[in-house]
Image (cartoon, rainbow, N blue to C red):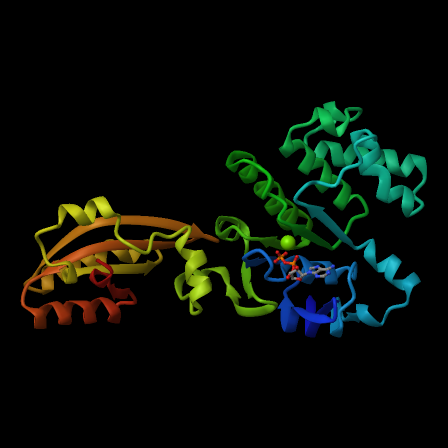
Amino acid sequence: MIEFKNISKHYTLKGQTLHALDQINLQIPEGSIFGIIGYSGAGKSTLIRLINLLERPTEGQIIIHQKDFTALDARALRQERASIGMIFQHFNLLQTKTVAANIEMPLKLLGYSKAEREKRLDELLEFIDLKNKKNAYPDELSGGQKQRVGIARALASHPRILLCDEATSALDPQTTKSVLALLKKINQEQNITIVMVTHEMDVIESICDYVAVMEQGKVIETGSTIDIFSQPQHPTTQNFIQTVLQQQLPVNILNKLADQHHNSIYCLQFLGKSAQETVIQAVIQQFDISLNILFANMTEINGTVIGQMFIQLLGDPAVVRQATEFLEQNGVKVEQSGESV
Ligand SMILES: Nc1ncnc2c1ncn2[C@@H]1O[C@H](COP(=O)(O)OP(=O)(O)O)[C@@H](O)[C@H]1O
Ligand SMILES: [Mg+2]
């Protein structure tokens, strides 16, 4: 586990103090993929750099695998850092060195013999599927290939933790997908804890088990990804969710309903796919109202489906109310969605 205890980081610029991190308390479970999301300037990079103490906190402690990293001397810290790998948005490869030399670099610094380095290099090239690029230079690689090399370099010394700072932000969507799949594989097969800093909610949605939302140096909300997606509390979290889950009825559908009562539109949210059809069926059968499905979409998070459906309910207001209450009793989140028109 990685634990932040009352962590603050202040920078002083021209006599002004900037609170880059303000009283952070956070626990990152062993073996998880933990996402940290926030807008630019929220403090994400500062937070992730504290994990391997590339930066020192102004206050507080970083406890990793029960060890207080903030209390280690320089020598002990150097040793412990070998168990933490890091990858970056712009890959940070040495342009004048080959793929092989880039990957071997941390092993050289740790004093591995030539034979040990070559053995490990072969394993890593196999793992990232770039054996044929062993002697290529970074300039000859695509963005996705460069990040694979970055990943191999980060994994070279068998770390237990992998830190990723906007690791897919410079990549196109297709390449992002393949890099995320590789990170998931690393987490599952090698049980490496992954901390992912990102400003993109779909990165969180695709691979993170947990997420912390940051704003102005604070963690404003944290929990399992599924809980945060289904019950976002803070407006900033809701804004992020909105980038992947449609929260409003598409305008063209709304326009087609122009002469109807917009306050008859409801947005339903379902957790788990199976219940969805049954519950809607029950409403249609049990209540004397008309139910039109206007729009539906779904997203899957760690194997749980979050379904969203916009419906129109027309009929006696008292019966409509009973129907929405029935939906809520069956675990469906119901929101009237007409007011925004
Ligand atoms: N070395 C530094 N010196 C002064 N201010 C810094 C330094 N690093 C970061 N900051 C400030 O701390 C805040 C958080 O920055 P950062 O952690 O990079 O945010 P994020 O990664 O979420 O975009 C910003 O206001 C930034 O300008
Ligand atoms: Mg950053």
